[in-house]
Length: 113
Length: 116
Image 1 (tube, rainbow over the protein chains, first blue to last red):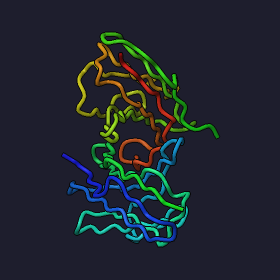
Image 2 (cartoon, helix red, strand yellow; image 1 turned 60 degrees about the vertical axis):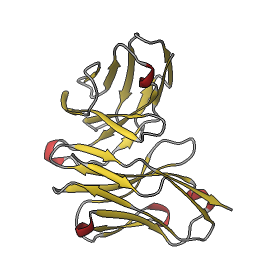
Image 3 (cartoon, each protein chain N blue to C red; image 1 turned 180 degrees about the vertical axis):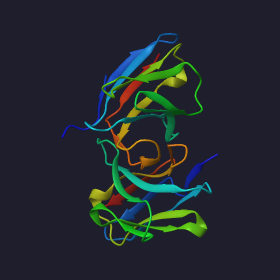
């Protein structure tokens, strides 16, 4: 069965600190990878995505993620976080054969001003 | 362009009753996905509809069912409600079908179901 693991449930950082959120998945077939973000009071929205090609992908608001196939990982990074990055972040893996997206449990990021 | 819309926003039911939740996808999207987001449990995949057909379902009992209409809107029905069905139910739509599906999801605001 396909699964997604996010290593941190809650991360607290000060503004300007660097961020890395871990995401590992278990599935040996072809996948598309996503990070979604849910800001307080808003709906889930796409942050960035990887389908193929350059394993380093850039998303909105200065976020980037690197796909490392050998490690089944798709970690999210940002060099310098802002207070407005406070949100819940979800990693998701789409199984192209089954047409099913599996989400991690989410990581709540709190950025202190 | 209108996003994914869900109704009702909130719904309160008692054990044993039935709940019906509705979703309208983004115009042009043919796939609709339903997820359950219970407290502390992340997003759990419920159902996937595409071109009017149920394509996949998650590990939920048969009392969770739904359908997709010719205009691609969708309905989620939960029969014989149990207390643990209390959750936020999210609908998402996606363009592309079958092998053309990318998995990029556009979410609605959700319907919060409370079972008393």
